[in-house]
Image 1 (cartoon, helix red, strand yellow):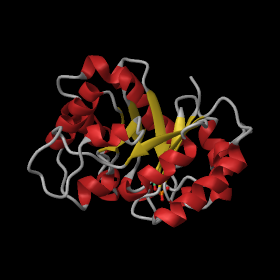
Image 2: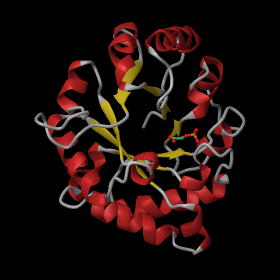
Image 3: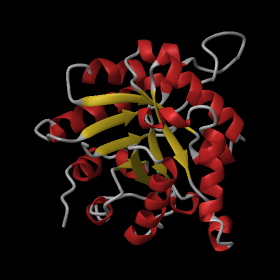
Length: 242
Ligand code: PGA
């Protein structure tokens, strides 16, 4: 399986900034082979980024979508519209959506089902909070997120990408140690019983990507902050196993 390197820009980069970031990135990674590189800009930048990368190795993803195909849902976006703009991937259940926007496991399950139906590959995020970690509930929380999120689609889980993102490590500079991350990845792998790619996310940087990617059950990384600078994201794409 090709290592997957995904850059989630979150609510950063207007169209002009997005264009310049992705143009620079293309120059820096044009010779890289055997990596699946996924760019996940904000909705408003998708058409611009799509136009620039359409003939390249870079793939396009969106940060969220609604669970229905169309209708009276003011302010929401259909996965079908995202596909029309060239998206192949969509992030579902990111911790910022769960914790700031109040998305439940039930909503996440509906979105995962719709994405499967319309042919978008979900990057399905799970992870425990700092408090849950301190209480020793990491496996229990992830187990719940997996069983409720995947209800009715367990047999299709190989069509998704999983992302383990400990909430305490997102945007905080605190990365899980490679051993901590690997342990949870092993747990998820055993729980899924299918050959699904599992990414690690949470303060991934040029300085820690090599050791993270050296772990057996880490198939790629989902990068936030460090994907906003072309040089640091390109360095992450070019990780080398120590
Ligand atoms: P971070 O974000 O790399 O800035 O910690 C990761 C994510 O939220 O996907």
